[in-house]
Image 1 (cartoon, helix red, strand yellow):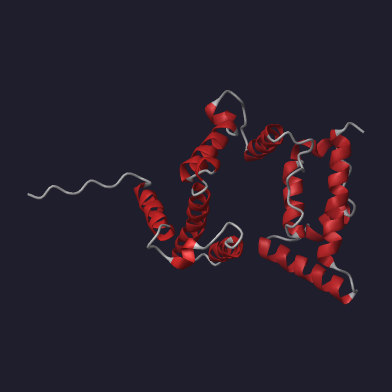
Image 2 (cartoon, helix red, strand yellow):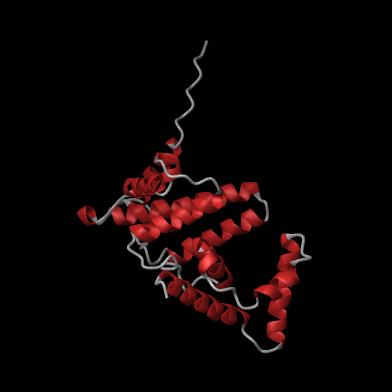
Length: 229
């Protein structure tokens, strides 16, 4: 009787992917892959990230698996490029070790004795630890200004959750709550956002720019609270 082949250990195919990339970048490999740099790959990294989001929003399970593979390729590609710098570089194992260490440090409620009973507490602890590790003076430091305004606003809100009781109310908070009180789904909320963007357009206002300015004002309020002003 034939003995069945043992199932490969989880992650075994990742080693094969690393080997394939090594071959593509080595002499006798692919000329296109060999000439790529961190900078030349930026457009592909961004494109693959957006395509992954599109697959998620379309509930395209097969598409998501494919797009995650394309994203993984970008990680392996960049690591291989860095590895070629020799002693001045780093490799895919350094990338993995770095994220393993980060996950353990930022989950003290799992790997240490810190209490965090809710997802909100976990997120707040994560951002506080991140600010401490990076020597940041504000929880809002490190949020890229290049992010779309709506995404940046969401990140500012999430990172400042622990300061919520000390921050002044948002301008327009009561009006916004009145508008959304009857909204029962995310889809309806999206319709309201689209309607607001349309109204801004009709009035000659830049909705993206207006929100970006409002986010900047909120960040300043957060930093004043952090300074104890």
